[in-house]
Length: 136
Image 1: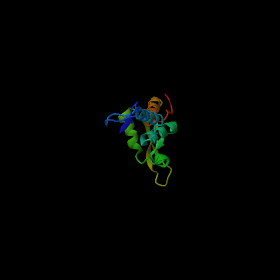
Image 2 (image 1 turned 90 degrees about the vertical axis):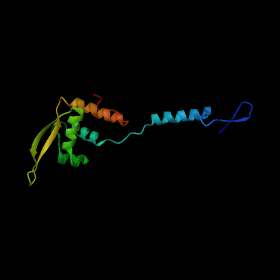
Image 3 (image 1 turned 180 degrees about the vertical axis):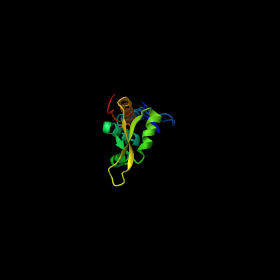
Image 4 (image 1 turned 180 degrees about the horizontal axis):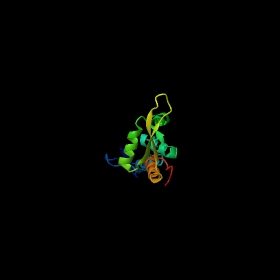
């Protein structure tokens, strides 16, 4: 690359050197990229936990989770929530009113774990570039 000096003569720039204009342009592009950070989509864990929080004391069973957001392994999500984040969901067996009298587990969050769950959702939202939802 060549650059014109004060006298109008051209001089060659080394590969590592940049003109002031190039440096300013690159800096401005970096600032714009930070300001316009792309918001990533919700993770499965965030969808699950937000749904569980929003369901309140009613909670969820595996069939409802599947219908609401396509989750087919609610029991695994509940388990990882306890193992990874020390948020333990309450649970109770229930019998569905269908011809087969299907039994399944219903899960909900205890009042003690609700603030931890909301804090975790907010952390996940911030991590993907979104504003917090609960701000606990």
